[in-house]
Length: 188
Image 1 (cartoon, helix red, strand yellow):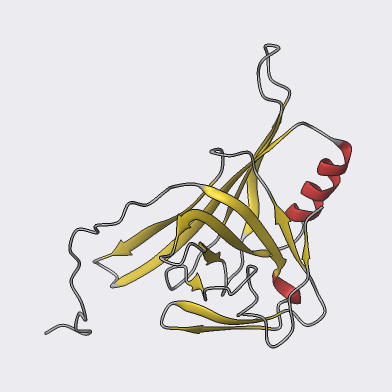
Image 2 (cartoon, rainbow, N blue to C red):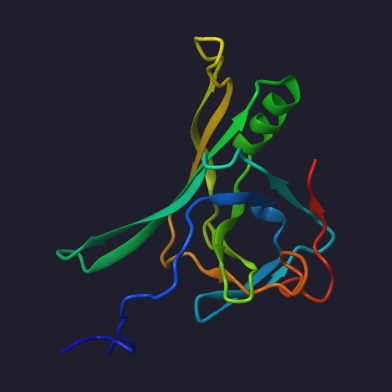
């Protein structure tokens, strides 16, 4: 006998979708007062007076993914969210910010190229319960003149549930998930 009954099937989706990440938003895990998740959707994020920090990776370079790991023997399943972020150009200021990212745990919101029927971008939340951490990366000068120089950073976490989607916004990202006050987004 099954523990949980399935609720839906899935046919072939008639819409096309786009891959990739437009923006990555970082919220310091300890500054997030609360998040409310209903039916795999983040419906509220309470940041108090704190901000979310937006990073714009070069187009087609960064990704958010989740690995599902189960054990039939143990009867367990968990999810490993991972974000790979690329930033072009080595700089002293980026070095300092990357050092700070490495010293804290974060929740990462990935604004995808995938769009809803209304044209708004899909935003997913990674590390909502147990946070994400910067656990690998490189700072690379490149070899040839045309090579990219910059950073490749990998964040990962462990979660009991799959990543939720952030509730759709009206005009700007997070405007419907902000506990009644617009979350300040720092862009540079």
